[in-house]
Length: 348
Image (cartoon, rainbow, N blue to C red; front, top):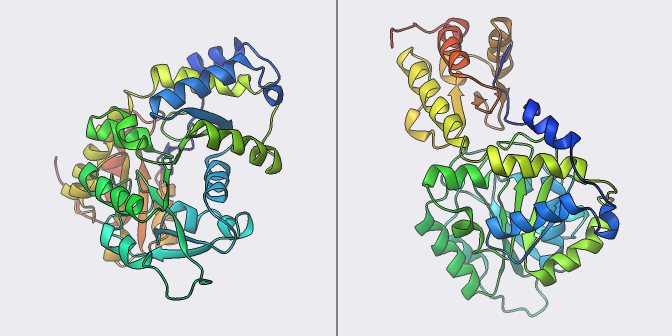
């Protein structure tokens, strides 16, 4: 099986397994695990923030951050298909007591004008108020799209002017930074809080970090315990993250190149793909344009040995590149996918 369902399907490399086996451990709850502390320091510096906190998942990191930024009954603004609104099971309502307002976006991006209009002051002092804005970079449901820095700065500056807290769901932030050829801190330092996921493009078995000011992260420690996220000898997992920072960041460019190659090859073979929309490691296929139901298309692809996955968009499936995919896998997929979907294979 050529498994292109997600970059979360990766297995630790032999080198990463060795790093895990050799990890120096301590009690993480007592802040005595040296490997966890090293990872937290490195990620804070990487993201241009004062401190970072190691957590089991990026969803937990998002939920803690949003809870700390607002009071119960306040309003969260986010693009309507963003992860915090679609895939976190209503967590911002259940955990933080926030009302949510999803805004229609362009390639997963909202505009400064939308933020300005939604956060306009009410004539009633007791009305619920917009207090926090969450942005996602890269944007999952938009197909791994990246925020242009000028658009990002426009939204950030507008939110700052309105005294709104800013959170970045940066689960795949390093993909965005590599795609734009910039340091991750150039993006992440603009925000009050940032999440970074280790188990996607970085290829770790699990783990995420929440970064922000020293004051925010100290408050986040209590929330980590409250959420059940405090651990013991967690360095055995954090070691994978340290290894990934050393060895798996620059190679994200390989995933992006393979995604572009797949998109171009499928497009040339008549598969409904927009190569111009491929900015990082995602390729979206419009099987609805072939009069195929999503589940039928996925079943056909599975039969020929290619794993793609569904998206929230009816009639659209996706392929995601990761460190478990080779150039040969991509070329083979370019042969198999068109035949499975019933398009004409072209010589490319």
